[in-house]
Length: 236
Image (cartoon, rainbow, N blue to C red; front, side):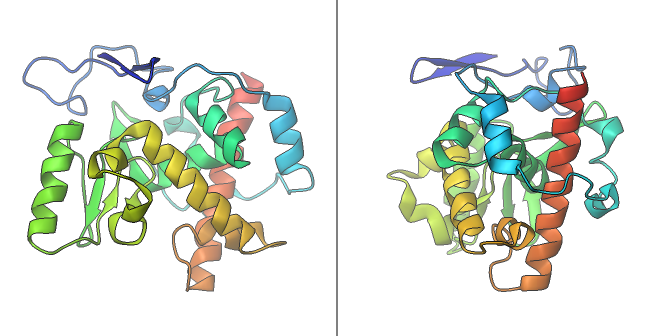
């Protein structure tokens, strides 16, 4: 499946007839699953990584991931430097591997034994749903709103409709992958800036702003996952 956003091409694997993609895929998986939403674009990886991560410890224990699916065995090697993650990360001063790690924690699902962020993921009432298209996701969001439920986390970055819906002009924008990543990066940047000198807390406030312990656990997990993903791309 190929579609574009403002002239930029976005590639998604094509699902077999009458099947949603997560059930079965005929597309090669080795380097595809974690790059479902990658789009080409300029990015100075070396400068970005040095400026954003200089002085940050790289030996975070992988036990902090405490989520069995997010391991070396389930994370294909990916390169984010020339993708939409790199473009948006540069724009907001957020390392793209950290941005992608947060997306993985927030919206990942398993496809053929690999984990990948899902562009139309929804979380409401303690349950996560994986619509197969933006149209299906929008219909579900509108139904929830009719039932007066607006505490819905939406898309790749699981942006909350109640707290951040005002940041987009239209509901459709919130489920748009590029807009969703951009908004998630803005929120993550704000969260990091709120806790100078404490990166785990800052990153974790993306998930739990008022609960410091929960925020630091989340932030440590995201940072550990970020290093795991980046180390694989460097060693490839």
